Length: 390
Image 1 (tube, rainbow, N blue to C red):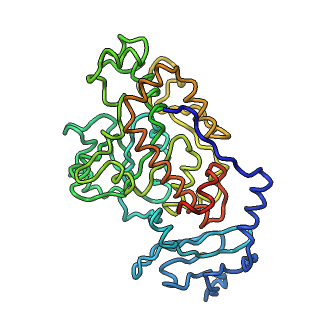
Image 2: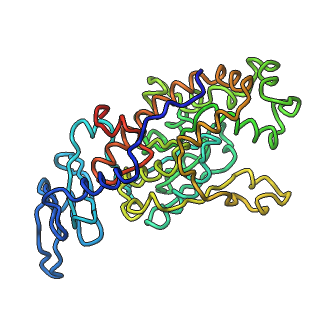
Image 3: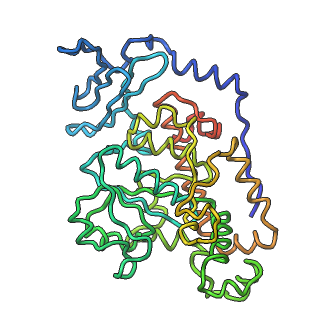
């Protein structure tokens, strides 16, 4: 129940810069040369020089000019990455078995089916708008997902129409327990975000207290009195919400989430977006992801006609991420009154255990991303950078 977050010391800014230069400019990575694992090939018509991974030639990975196209070999299923840096035209790197167990790249194609499961108050509205925009700009189609539950309980869309449409990207507040029913037995590539359960619950309480007309929440002055009065009748979304939303048969919730292609952490949103772009090989977005601000959106504005949020559905709010998300999360937790924190902690203990396990996996994936791209991510705790956790 300790509220403080144990912090690890980070190298000073100058040391980080020097480390980045050493990573990028290691021997053999001169400008215009292929990386150590690639061979140089001249294009027969344009004269441009390619860097081609030797494992499966062009169908695996061709890096050309300012763009790196990467993929997974159909013959050997070997994941291959190609990346640019200031010191190399292109370097192709094969994931080690240890790295592949932590993270495997997923192709983002018009043949894929991707499902963003939106858990409320985790920044899901912002990500829904982002992923749907990316889909449209990359030639993928967006699935028709209703904001409110579809007429069949627990489904967000007519499953027959959904699958017949051939759409690619679905973003909805669904449940894992109904995955097979919603997608008619086809398992999509799964994507979600998690937020610190105590902070998520506080946000959910504030939202429901203001907008919800159910569950008698308007009768209570604070969340502590609500827990004491309602007891077992407390709404599930104010208790172990993740355990409820991500539960499926024949697997623990942790096993289920570990099988997701991508699990972002709302509390580290900017780095999460970088990891998303990396995982799905969206290199044009990944290259400058740490310096690109992403607007946040508030879905509550959709139901609000009082002039707040300028009266716009999904209106933009603050677009500036915190400089130190570790410190920002600790500050937010410490701002919660002790009695309320204790009550929420008791009601979300299972979610907290799940969250901490997934944060560990998240940082392991960020470490793999850092190792392969040779870009430094300042949020990454030092113990993961040392390599002992991969």
